[in-house]
Image (cartoon, rainbow, N blue to C red; front, side, top):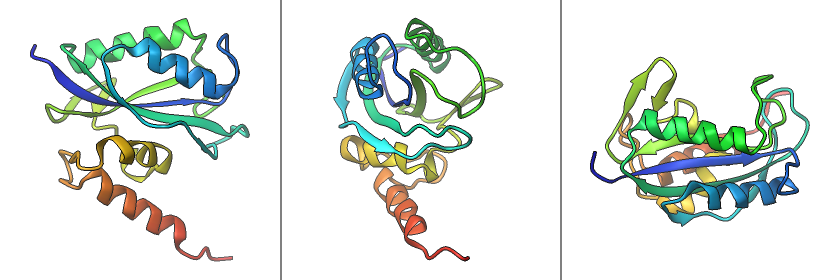
Length: 161
């Protein structure tokens, strides 16, 4: 396979062997290899039942791996960091998700690229905006910049009591 690029979202909200969540994210960036751009680390509120805030970042990597090969490597890194399968959206030492792939889209039972939920998640879009603002979602043809702007507008809408 030729070299392609991937956008990877990284998150942590639990201490691990590297320390606080921010240090876990930084260590994961180093463990990935092939990183050509990395965002800063930002804090975000948790989704679901977790009460701990997350440290989030995004990176662009280049590799010859297919999406399933990369997913298998990301899962190995998560296990090496101490991630255990458990409650959905619960506390985790590290979470690594394939968000976008330069070759387009991919769909299998256990892997969908682009990530189905990334278009509305500011904790993914905000870090990605700094390193891949012009990258187009192959399914909507919207850029990361456009998606981030929409997500920000939704967050600013008044809430009903």
